Length: 359
Picture 1 (tube, rainbow, N blue to C red):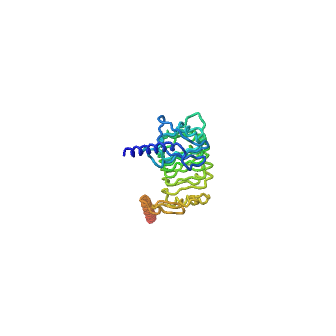
Picture 2 (picture 1 turned 90 degrees about the vertical axis):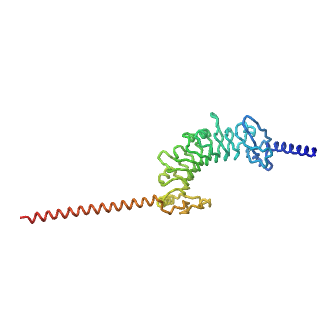
Picture 3 (picture 1 turned 30 degrees about the horizontal axis):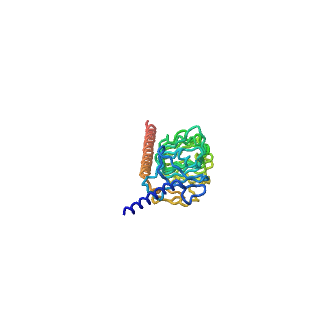
């Protein structure tokens, strides 16, 4: 019995050691230039992993391990330059859902997907050049503090930036001042109550601001987005919008998503009529799901609106009542004024006749 137990222990140790060795190699089936690695526990300063990677590998994609004999959480707490160098300085990194708390951008990194983590800061050391063109930080709920985003202004070659679902409330004043190549910017599903278009780079061609709390979309002569073609303002708190001013700000606009805002039917009709006149689409005809409304929504002229869109709200009834009261008061005032004038007219006539009849 003891001999069997010893054999089992040896087998378990061999399996554990073998998995530990394989966890630092590309998984079978990895593409020629893309290495797929299982995530593992990494804490900066405590352990320096060693990898056996082909020299041709230019991209690293981390995935959840198929089995976890160690019982660890497999959290890469920080993607820093030490780990980047140990991975042979890849040009592309995809590290998702690993509870990563911080990332340090390496100079040669061109593509980075750090979505669905717990990132609180993006480290971009100053006085260096960076090749990064694509950065995905979606679903990082701890990026809400403006200080966590300030360093992004140093990524001057950035072309695509995803910051959706990050609980962002305010945008740092100088965040975009050096991003003159930024074309795609997504800020959907945040807590933005207002947006200053003058902060945004003029190079934008796509801007997503849907699912925020914007009550107005400010336009001014100083705000210019001359290359913008796709703008999404769905699911905000907009009650009106000046299409003419919008087109002055974004003259190349081709797709403008405006649905799911608390717009009244006459206001929405005026907006859609003007968009049609200018040949600007308000739903993506190439994506069928863009015309599919939710359970508590109604479809109106290609736009999805809240189910009570056709129903009169209490504010509408109050406006009607106030209008009716005002109209009654106006008519009452006119009647009263007419009566007074009529009495004065008759009294004047009576006085004239009386004076004529006196001897």
